[in-house]
Image 1 (tube, helix red, strand yellow):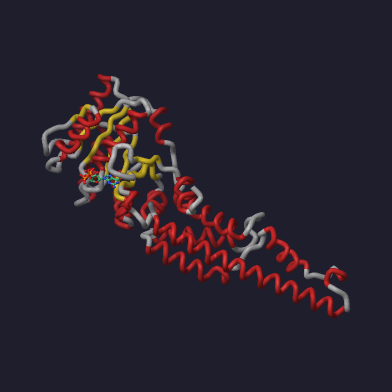
Image 2 (tube, rainbow, N blue to C red):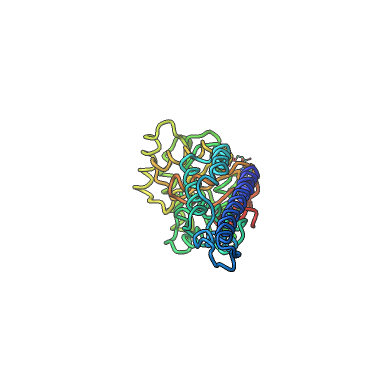
Length: 348
Ligand SMILES: Nc1nc2c(ncn2[C@@H]2O[C@H](COP(=O)(O)OP(=O)(O)OP(=O)(O)O)[C@@H](O)[C@H]2O)c(=O)[nH]1
């Protein structure tokens, strides 16, 4: 998962560390030269005079503890390369800029005190920068379900063909494993074959499916599912919707009606990690049309770039809740920003 991105982050780390070492050498040389000069003037050694320039002395000394790091010029090239690498990985422009700003602020000047090796300092800056954009509005899905009044109604939105149906089935299994019953509802009354497709999953998972004829009203389907859940003590309603984005008015009208009549607890946007920047753009559009509460990215297992995973939370202001990591029902990983960042930095 995200191998290409890991490699690029690794290259930045190497380059930034090298730049840090070079800057450290320069500073040490400067300090030594100043001290030697002062010693030559008095005919004593620098240690004897105690005459080392206090600021340079402090700077050189701090290199051992890693307190003063670099100035902007030292970092210009590695940061430029990192920006290009992030954009190549389909990271959204504003997200790439935020990452660079955080790294620069962390590594230059004395904004933070470090007590470790250069390697750790660069890694810490990268970690901070990644978390800054990925860890946005994160909430615990399991806790949310536990704390919500039952039935919890979760509606899924997003364009067709991104694995939405499989994701709903995976989530039914996920909930099952945690002791929650669920009912599936096919609010995608638009697409031919949608009922049959979700029915197959429902049968395999031994779940009830509520569906209407093709062309029916999606809100009515989900409403029926809520009634079914209430009557049968079912904990969670998982409702698919048609992912049409022909005009956002269509979508808005559909979701406004859903909001008014069913009032879902969560609206989750589903898209493919592999779609990169397209997924990020769609997330923005769906969020402005439907005000999403979070995202599930499918096909993360097939995505080397990681651009969508890095960008979507920052761009929408809503967290990623799960990653789809394969084709079986168990291939759904709860999203944890720290775990992702550890993985990206090879620290998992
Ligand atoms: N490798 C991988 N395959 C997935 C993942 N999620 C879904 N798939 C596969 O993608 C294919 C399409 O998934 P479906 O759920 O049927 O999605 P769809 O019918 O194309 O479209 P929607 O349900 O409308 O999104 C299926 O073969 C799924 O097994 C995932 O996270 N990783």
